[in-house]
Image (cartoon, rainbow, N blue to C red):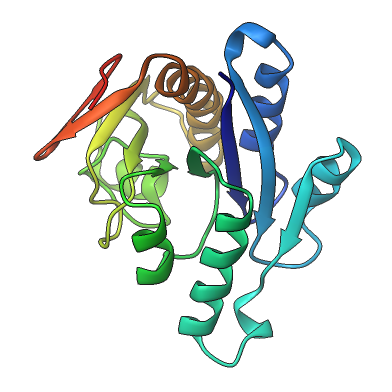
Length: 204
């Protein structure tokens, strides 16, 4: 059985492209059935549409309130019946309508080793703090900001001459590989969550 993925993006969609490339292999066991962007003009949406994938753009500014946007996002996701929702560079916090529609079935990738350096400036904050190891985290989305159970982490060495931009690019490369590897594992072999801990290759 092929796992159905819905992917949320906000920009060029490099993580999305990595997932689409992986899905071309039948043994990967996944297909992307829907791509949603939170802003108009995202290159990732164009790429998905060219690949024949169902797409939608739901910008917060197109709705009277944040709550109505959240409900519209939940409804649009539900229409595609995904097995997993992948937040891949999506820059909006998901609200109660989406979280309740897909409890424990939304994952997000973040460019720091959580719980250190949450928020939108993970690599910059890591450099400012002076850490020697940075990295990326894939986690289950909950009501908090970057607070869900950790599914996978990968480490990236911080070099003495790193700038934020250089470090970020190295993290992104590791992050993409981790995202593809972990999502495929989740769909093929299952996962479970117990309290604060998440386990791959395990059915609930």
